[in-house]
Amino acid sequence: MFIEERIITLFKRNFHHTCTYWSVFFSFGLCIAFLGPTILDLRCQTQSTLSQITWVFFSQQFCLLIGSSIGGVFKKTLFSALAALFLSSLLISIIFAIIPLCHNVLLLAIAMAVSGLAMGIIDTIANIQLVAIYQKDSAVFLQALHFFIGFGALVSPLIADPFLSETGCRVGNMTENVTEIMHHFRNTLRNSPIVMHNVSMDHLPLAEEPEESIVSYAFWIMAMINLPVPMAVLFLMYQEQFIPCCRSTTPNLLDKDELAMENQGAEGPDTEPKDQEEGGGHGDIFSCCQNNNLRELPVSFFGIHIVGGMVLFMTDGIVGAYAGFVYTYAVSPPISLPNKTAGYLVSIFWAAITAGRLVSIPLTFRFQPVRLLLINLAGVIVTVLLLLVLNTSSIFLFVGTTLLGLFLSSIFPCMLAYTEDILDYQGCATSVLVTSAGMGEMVMQVLVGSIIQSEGSYSFLLCGMIIGCIGSILFFGLLFFHRMHRKYLTGTSVKSAMVEEHPPAAAVVDSETEQKESS
Image (cartoon, rainbow, N blue to C red; front, side, top):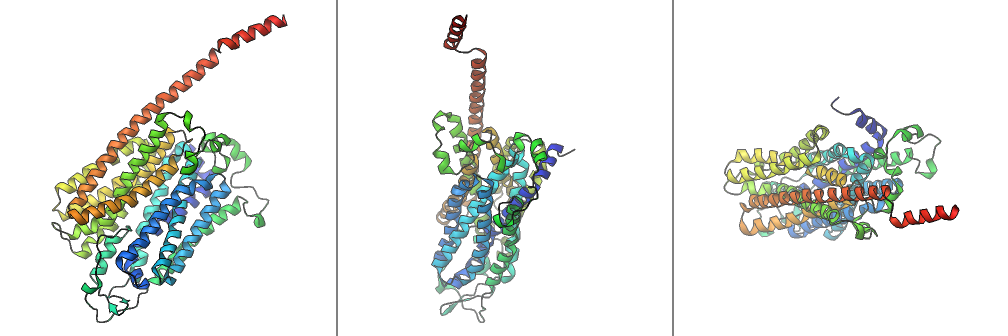
């Protein structure tokens, strides 16, 4: 069969857990891409300037990074992990429901920050739980998990689009005609919390018939669409008998016979070995740093964490920067696409990421994550290089955007599976990688945006080329540390075997002395 029977059996045993984590990530994807297209409507709602409203989205990205850093705290037990997922997903629905009521930019910033914190916790916990369940078989399930992010990010702009203002909105005593400008900024800012340009209200023409914003309905619909997610988590908690008032006598999702049949590599998150939790396991970054066994670990252990995190810092930085500024590049010389045509580029990019993660699911059964990583990183460099060479071709811009999305799509889940496999699922790789990826997406957007503003639109692709090359060089550094770590593990196992076969001389003398005394 194309899929191993063992993996199918393992998936059936953990079906409810897996589908719940996938649904939570679909909600996560909706939240990532939903807010960007509504930025100008929210500006009108809060009566704020464009520069003020962009800091609202920055607060969400920053708190998402914090949530990713501390999310591992809740993985110690299955109950705490599911409770954190339930509260976080429920918070997202509540925040979406109250966003239309935030008529002050500070209140909106606080709401966005809370949603970002919840999203960061979801990001870390869902990744950790799937790795804990499937371990060496986790690559394919991580690919599916991140497919749901792309799917949610692809669907969310479609939900918002019917409710976005087209003819303008009232801001104080002035009115904006944003029929053209609205499209420009909406597509420029989609999936990016950073804004390149500040537009003065004095330079905007007046509209004859301004309309009231109805974007509130989009947020309320979003809140309703997200509600089944916390309900699904709550139902899983009920099945696991974690709700005191609703405990039943029915067996848990995995009965005793099935649990006895499972090998150690397929144990669920609630049956993790005790020594793994005591050793730090997949905890948050702060608990990883406080691990008492760190002094005994080799240099390669730290190198794998640092270099692996830096690779994702670069690659996820490309994702954030490209999604945020490809529209600006497309409408600028030498391509100078029409605004409406250029607006499709971001949607095509996210559609390619979604399709790439879907295609990577069967590929993971046939190829090791390290091979997929090599192909994807090489594909990113070649694609950006061709975009630089053919920088006047509007047709290849669409082709290159599609290819870039396909190659970038599976780097994160493959890197996560690869590093966890190197460390035998005993390290803090998940928390480090998730945090590094979020930090890269946030920092690279700021860096690339400032470079484009000062050097021009052509520097957009040049930045992508430089970042991609640095990421590839770091990946070869990761391969070097992998080799070092493998030698360390081999040497450790040989030494332990020698100690067992040849006990120390002192122990031999003691045993001989005891024999003489007994005789």
